[in-house]
Length: 424
Ligand SMILES: *Cc1c(COP(=O)(O)O)cnc(C)c1O
Image 1 (cartoon, protein in one colour):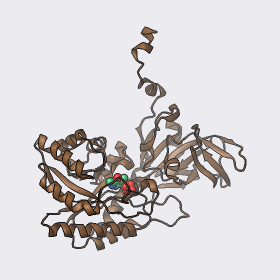
Image 2: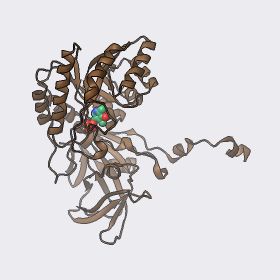
Image 3: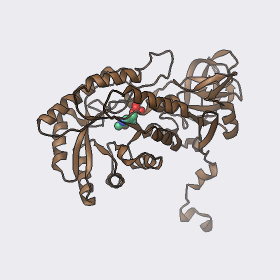
Image 4: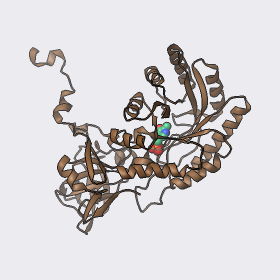
């Protein structure tokens, strides 16, 4: 459920007509809905209501915008970070350190030290080598790092290969067969306190069965560790729940179904559960507004050339992702078209032979479900400044990231002395 809807013939975000934002800020621009963010946070929490004090640590990478983070922090969500930058953003947005988890296969010693000093809740470690580094860093600071061992359960999440993280050939986590030994290693190293197990098998999951298989393996491991005399206080079950992008595809499992499965599988574990939802919270809380530059005749279907490019929204290029595409002021007519951006890459194609609202030059369009893994992946390819972002709450709206002026982009480069004006 989201709060983007037609009202008097114009697509609105909550009570704000999207053309008003496009006129004021220009296009392309991302627009987020506060009511949708809050709703998703509450639905997710309600779905886990049967559990004892779970921590919902929002996966910051899905959308690290400060207004989005602050909105979710006010819903008492924690944060799952995969870099010191994301920890810093979460802290800045008001997420308390004791609700922050740091994951990732490539944490550097400097990142570990900064996160330790900040007092984060837990490090999810992904290799034995990382345990040694973290131990050295913690010992040098005279601090103790609470550690969860991230297990690679070798489960096929059944999602796109590029967002699959729980198969043995993926880089993430420690193989199940080595996990107990890795836990014992952490217990033996100074500066580390093993507190639990973590798992995350992939993103945009549309079936609960692989998650359930992964969680069952975690349950076995917890029992095995306890039998060997290790305390286990927490289990971090990761994120991954999918969102509906295409209404013609089967709907992904609901948070309620997910929560019920978790409650059943984790019964008797006697741990604090941690969840790391990203996409499920923010995916359909955002749209990317774009304007049609022109409609160009094509061999079979016309090309709708929009002013958003793959540098603004790379998901279709990167993951073969499907985004619904709606006219902001639909005329009630449909046509079949290719939707492309202005970037000089054939991959800059959002849709091919897509039945959609008929649009013409100057019309506004919205890419739906553009709240997750969208603005955050934007680049400046083709010297296109980073996309601005706005957020709506009821009948109010505000810019939450300014459009970057091209001068600012150019000014980031420095000429070496032998090329600068003085030495021309
Ligand atoms: C990306 C990621 C998540 C969030 O995944 P979603 O599919 O957006 O829910 C959670 N945990 C870890 C470790 C991740 O890397």
